[in-house]
Image (tube, rainbow, N blue to C red; front, side, top):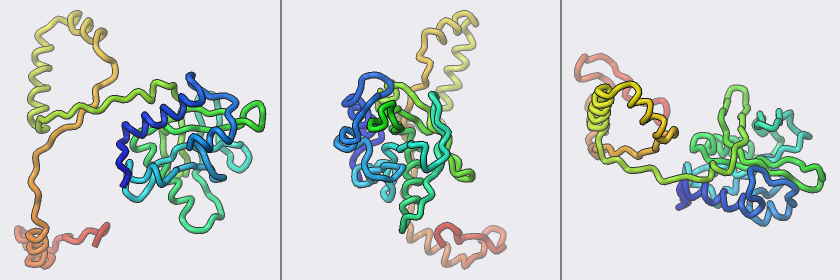
Length: 241
């Protein structure tokens, strides 16, 4: 499993982009530069770099690093704001397409920026946008990638909060009651002075480590019958049997 965290991977991609530009779009980049930096390699539409990105989101799949838009093989809707990207559907053997789609999904769920590569004015060169997948539609087999600025690479580690969920809610209710004692103008003044982007936190939750033997034995003894109502119960999950 890869030891990189999501934060470290975002920062790594920021360093890659800074190697080709210090503004929001890189113009006139050579294919050799993209390949050497690891921004894009190969002939596929989605570049994953599985060896490096596997394990960042899941053990089995990598995270999409970039997509190539040529306007030739797919009907992608490309604009200055972003791109409606069609999922890959090729005749390659094996599970290449499936793996690339999963890599795009991992990128979407983890909110990791990726690179969108298109032809430059000089057809031998490439332009590179920074994108965030805003919508991942499995039904219509499309993803919408919005072009964003360099600021997306500036990330902070989430703060670890050691309150339980109940403790957090109790404190939050107390804070709301305290805020209600102030005037509306005082609250508005504090709102204007506050950061308009919520701070991310990792909430600490206490739980019990269950004994799998106890669970298995209970299921064995119950034999599919609920001990409370004595009716057949769905103890077996379809997902894992």
